[in-house]
Length: 268
Image (cartoon, rainbow, N blue to C red; front, top):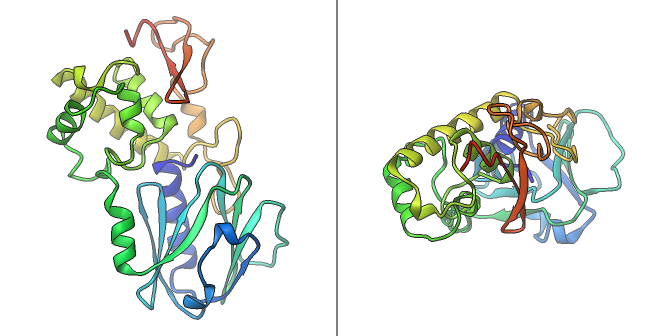
């Protein structure tokens, strides 16, 4: 699933590519992926492309918004020239110059039309953005202290922290030398400080390298090229390999149904 760095990468690309253009047509190939009436936004100008958590937000001139969630395998492909839809194309948004293809193999992703009140309600459930001033040591102490869940599970909870998914949770916990199974409320003040620093580090790295196109290679940028952060993974999907720090063999377990990778020595 695209996480904060991947969605941020897509946002930055599209903000340059489609801001100022007008929507001239929307072809819906799968109603499940676009349940609303496209006539509400046809003819409207795109003002900006923004991100909140793992959501892309396209602001329009009629004060409505297209909100997009890519879920597990969604892609947004921008083409200036005519392109024949691929098998996984669910929605085609034609602009006065170019087309935006929403591809989603598993049909979990979606595009919705929301007014400002609906958008505010949709986004209110998310926790603070890790790259914002609200993501403080004090906030994390409170958020972790109120739960007895493993810290890895808490990091994936979008109501606690917005945008972190499985890749960056694994990477941050390794960088902070914290066992992913440790109960969140058991973290010391020093561990919380290290973890906050590690989260910021790996997310900024992810953005720097345009996100991670991991083993399934489902994540691509709007120009169809891959991200490169997978070349810098510390621990994600490296089970059976030697830890880069201590040479102990990296282990894989399942936490909350997600593959979890850790070094049994560095993350005791």
